[in-house]
Image 1 (tube, rainbow, N blue to C red):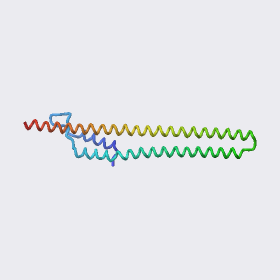
Image 2 (cartoon, rainbow, N blue to C red):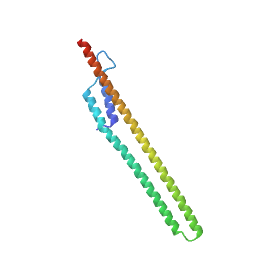
Image 3 (cartoon, rainbow, N blue to C red):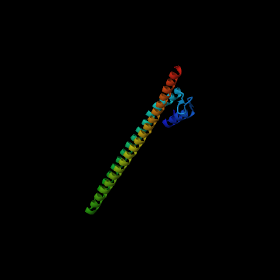
Image 4 (cartoon, helix red, strand yellow):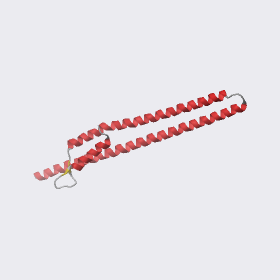
Length: 162
């Protein structure tokens, strides 16, 4: 099964290889059965593209959760170290300060990863939306061209019959 880009290229090839209608350079005779097959292929492939975007979103969520778990582990390790070092006021103060720094760093890193992941997913979804919008516009243009060919063909037939 082809991806949507390949199918659209096949549609363009179909248009490029089609013969012009007699007495008209802008109207083409197109194999409508083949064009319908290509449109059906696009319809079948759109869900796959959406599934890929959902997988990317799922992976981003997984990465965020892993980062949060690592941050929690770092905090726990820092707390355990601080407890082990409790032997005097200065050591306790230093340990608490270090634990707070580690916690702040872990939270900042977690937020950075969350922001980057969110931005990445937003960009991927925006790109997918633009891609599908363009594909849909191309399909509509092709359908409109075919409709015009049909209209022109039937009006030519009507004029020839008179």
